[in-house]
Length: 63
Figure (tube, rainbow, N blue to C red):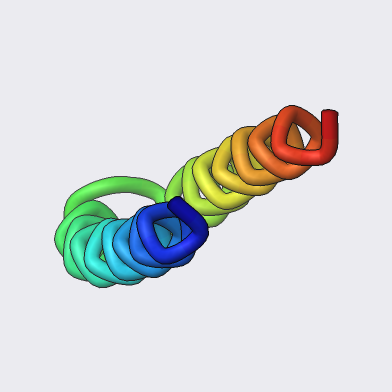
């Protein structure tokens, strides 16, 4: 059971890494077509949302 939890955490981190890669590609596309400041605000909002989700998952796992 512990192995499945570790494997799930590893897959979650891998998924977030892939999502960050897509975010960087999307940010480069958006930066060429839109205002750069809007793109930076969007990246910050996305990363903070991921941080909140990870924090909630961490809080739930300790209960």
